[in-house]
Length: 511
Image (cartoon, rainbow, N blue to C red; front, side, top):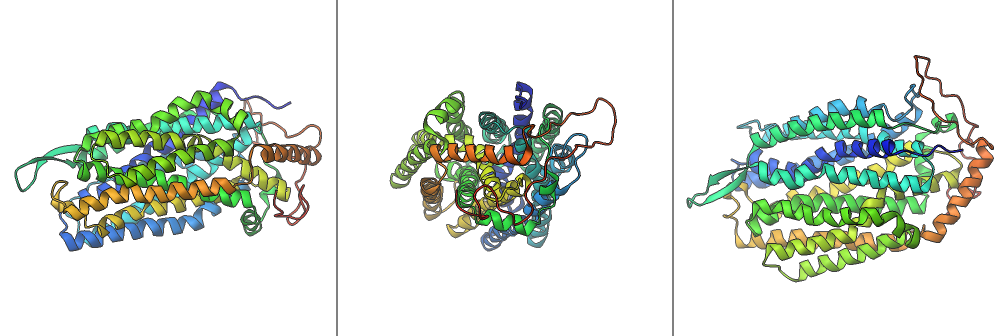
C-alpha cells in the first residue's frame, strides 16, 4: 500500500521553491535594472544602447548554454547512484550553497567599470548563476515524482511549490521597491528615486541566507518514497529526448510552460520601468506584486475541488481567456491612472493563477504520459527537458533590455528625463508583448489533448502498465537507515529495454 504524504513533506517541498524563487524573482525583476541603472549609469546614449544590446545577447547565450546543460543535468541525476538519502534530494545541498553565493556576486556594484569590463562581469556571473540553478532545479523537480504517484498528492505538491514560490517572490516584489532606492536630484533640481546598488547587494546577501535555510529545511523534511528503476538509469539521452519530442502532450505543455515563465519574468522586469518612467511612481511596484499574487492566494483553498469538478486543462483555459481579455483592454486603453492599471493587473493575475498553481502537476502528467508511451520511467530527463523549455522562456523575457534600447531608454537621463516617444514606447512594451504571450498560451491549452476525461483514461492505462511491470508489490519504499550502511536501495523489476514497446504499442504513439 502506498504511503501517504504528511504535512511535513508538503512544507519541505514548498520551502525548497521558496529558496529557488526568492533569488529568481529578484533576478527577474531587478537584474536588468541593475545592469542599466547601476553598472550602466555613467554610459552616454550610444554606449547605453550597446550595453543593453550586449545584456540581451548575454541572456540569450545563457539560455542556449542551458539547452546543453539542462538535459545533461537531468541525465546525470537520473544515472547517478542513489545515496542513502535517495537520488534527487541531495542536490538541494550540493547545489544550494554555491547557488546562494552566486546570486549575491551577480549584483556586486563594482564602480567605474568600462563597457568591456561590464560585459565580461555580466557574462561570467550570469552564466554561473544559471548553471548552478540547473543543478538544484532539475533534481528538485524530479523529486516530486518519487515522493508520490497519487494524483491528488501531486496536485498538492504543485500547489505547495506554487505557495513556496509565491512567498519567495514577496521580497523582490513587495519589499525591494521600498528598500533598494535612494533619493537623488536630476539636472533640473527635482528630487527623484534611483536604484542603489549598495542597498541592492545587501538585500541579496539576506536573500542568500534565506536560500540556504530553505534548502536545509527542504532536505530534512522531504523523503523519496519510490525507487528509481535501474533500467531507466541506463537509458541513452538521445533515445529519451527523441521519445519526448514525439510526445504531443509533452511538447504542447513545454511550450505553454515556456510562455508562462516568459510572461511572468518579462512583466516583472518591464513593469519596473513602466512605473518608474510612465507613471513616475517607483514605490507602487509593491502594489503591482500584491495585485498579481493576491488572486493566486485566494484560489489556493479551492484549487483541488475546482480541478476535480472541472479538470486541470479546462480551468486553465477559462483563466487564460480572462487574462487575454484584461491585457487586451490594458493595451487598447492607454490607462492614465496607475491604480486602474493595477486593478487590471489583478484581473490578469487572476486569469493565469490556476495555470501557475498547476503547472508542475501538469508537468508530471506529461512525464507520466511519456512513461505510458514508452514503458520507461525517465522523470529526470523529462523534467530537465521541461525545465529547458522554461529556460527558453527566460531567454524570450530577456528581450526586455533590447526593446528598451529600441524605444530609446537611457539611464543617464533619469526617470523623468526620457523623451515622450520613449515613455509611450515603454507603455506599449508593458502591454502588447504580454498580450501576445497570453494569447499563445490560450491557443496551446485549447489544443492540449489531456482534458479531464483523457487524463483519467491515461491514469487507468498507466496503473495497469505499472502493475504488470512491477508486480503486485508495486514499488519498494525507501527506508532511510537509522545507522550507517552502504545506502543500497534494492532493485525494481526491470522496465522495458530501449526501443521496446510501451502500453500503447509503438513508441511515441499519441495518447
